Image (cartoon, rainbow, N blue to C red; front, side, top):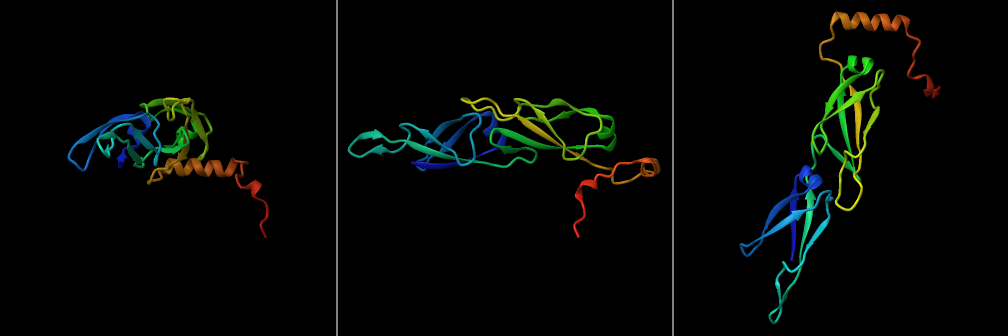
Length: 175
């Protein structure tokens, strides 16, 4: 017997118990192991149809489909998440709460951080039963407010007049 079961991302990451309804009205209780992957097939010994001539029941196979998560992206056993940060948090540094598959943790955003910078949370990725846990990577994305205030404009003008920084200096001439 073959079945398909869709599960939420966090249930696949943490493990869960689900009931799979069978065509004959019965149900199979299924333990989803922590770290199960999209497309992985779980084998349930003796939970299939009975064999011919009063033979033993065969196996049931359940293919797992993992629904995407709005915040987390899985890459192997690692997790990636994008963290919006304000201009002042990037410039001055900050301690911010970040969601992980096992619950929120506090991360230190270093002073002078840039968009695209990645921070590593060791062991906060997927933790399969028979393998070491992956890591979670937090990609910073600096987000400006929709309304730019006069104070922000003045700070930017001062920066433009005095800064020697050119982030495009390494691009070279493309002509």
